[in-house]
Length: 370
Ligand code: KG4
Ligand code: ZN
Image (cartoon, rainbow, N blue to C red; front, side, top):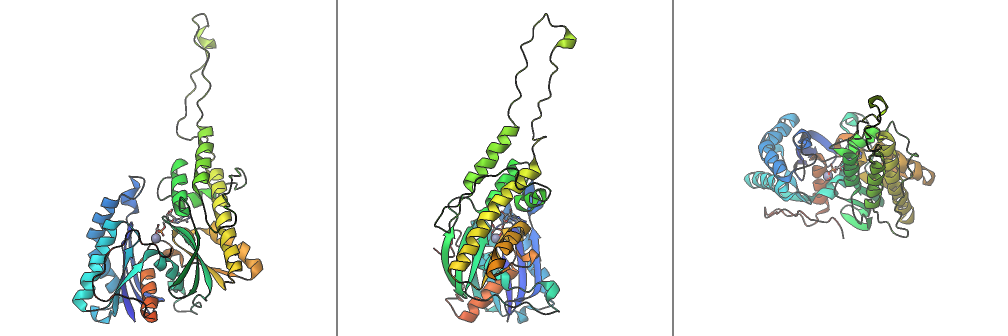
C-alpha cells in the first residue's frame, strides 16, 4: 500500500510516499529555518504563508522522486494536530483536495503519534540491506519534541497509556530557550548540542527536578537556574572611584570597556551542564518506566530524539537491563511527512476509526493521550 503523506504542523513543509508503513519511496522536507531565524523563533503567520507557497511543489517533487503517478497512490494521510492552526490548515486542505479528487481514503494523523511511528521507518541507507526489525510491544516511548515531553506505554498499535508528562516546558522548548539565553540563536536544540560537545558537563551542577514517585518532568526551574548563572557573568562591574580633580590624568582609573554580550560566558560548559541535567532525568525516568512495565524496548520520538547525548544516556542506563533503545533515522527525528505515512498505514491496518469521508478538520490542541 502506497500512502501519500503530508506534514505542515509547524515550520517544515513536507510530503512523502511510504510503502507498507516502513519503506520511504520519497521524502521531501522544505525547511523554513532560514526564514524564521531572523525572528529568533517560528512566526505562525509567516509559517502558514510559506506552507501555502511550498505545498504544491513539495507534493509534486515527492511524486517525481518516487517516479509514481497519482494512480499508484492508495491513501492520503495528513497531520491534523496538534500544531499551529494556520499551518495545519494548509496541509489538511491539500490532503482533502487530493483525496477527494482521487476518491481515496483520507487519514488524519496525530503529530505525536507520527513521531512515534518514525521508529518504524527503515533508514534509506539500509533499504537495500537487511531491514531492521519493527519495534516490539510492549514498549515505552519517550516523546521529546518542541511542544511535548511524555512517557507513554504502548501495548500494541494505537494503544497508548500516558505514564507521565512535563508540568511546564517541553524538553525541546527548554533547549530552545536556554540556547537563546546563552546567545546561540535558533533553532536552539542542535546548536546547543554542538556547543555542549566541547564543554564540561560537571562544571555547573544544576539542580534536577526529580518529582519523585511520578513519571512527570519539570524543566522551568532548570531554565531559571541557567538564566541566573548567565546573570552572574553579566553582573555590572564595580563602579570606579568618583573623579577627583586633584588626581593627575595618568593616575585616574582607566575606563573599563563594559562588555555587554557574553564575552566571558562559559557557553560550552553551561550548555554541557544544562544538557547533562536534562538527559539524566529523561533517561532515568524512562528506563524506570520500562522496568516497571516490563517493556521489551524503549523508543525515542520527537525532535530531541536527534540528540546524541540523550541517546547515549538512555543506552547506558538501559544496557544493564538488557533493554534496547531505538530512535528514528536521523532525518526522520524532526518533523517530516514519512512518519505520517507510517502512522497512517498502521492505523489503516488496525481498522481503527479512520475517517474516509473528507470531513477531517484541524485539531491544534489534540492530545495523543490524556
Ligand atoms: O519534533 P520537532 O521537530 O517539532 C515539534 O513537534 O516540536 O521538535 C523540534 C524540537 C525543537 O525544540 C528543537 O530544538 C529540538 O526538537 N531538537 C533538538 C535537537 N534537534 C532538534 N534538541 C536537542 N538536540 C538536538 N539535536
Ligand atoms: Zn514534531
